[in-house]
Length: 279
Image (cartoon, rainbow, N blue to C red):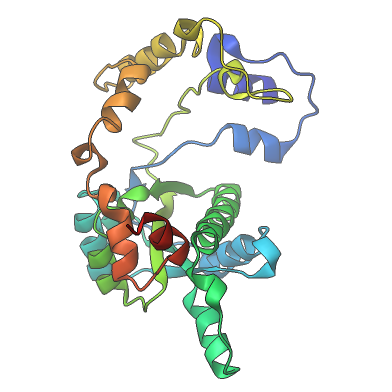
């Protein structure tokens, strides 16, 4: 199965690996984003199981600078679905997990001890919260897929972060990093494994190597992705053009170009950045 999974992920550029048959590895290689769900309820204690898996992920210095909000009510899921897209699958699946960079908990602990936590207000600490949240969420994804469930990340939580924060009731120094939709995949609309860049494009040994022939940096990936799009009835476009278009202007960021402003509105402050831009 591992060889088949590698071929599904990489196509003709699949590395020839002599690997043992490991069900967990097969599951990870076979990951796909699910955007069509049936409305069936999740098994009992699914939420608590996913959170347990999430909390088992590494966390920098054991600071645990993340939290998660489980959104299960139909009304609130529909509100979020409209804010991030709209993306209908948020309203269709029974559970949306919103992962947060959460510095407010440590701030409250410092206040109880009548101490200052100045380090909360430096960029690296916010970055730590984002990384912690991402590691935790990926553990939840692996656990959900092991339970036969489907998932999809929703970066659109950052399109209108103030509005999302209002729906979720988050306090100062808490920021919605992304959502994770969890539910039973619709068997009538199965998701497919999307091909990835060849390993030669992302794997560097010892030091970063800029390719001598940059026209060949991504190999035949444009063709591979075009074939995937054609097979699944998607608008065909070269990946190399798609990614540049997606980042080609502030407007293309769909609201995320104002992240710094949104962070300030959420109570975050960065003396390390502000002092460097004064004058």
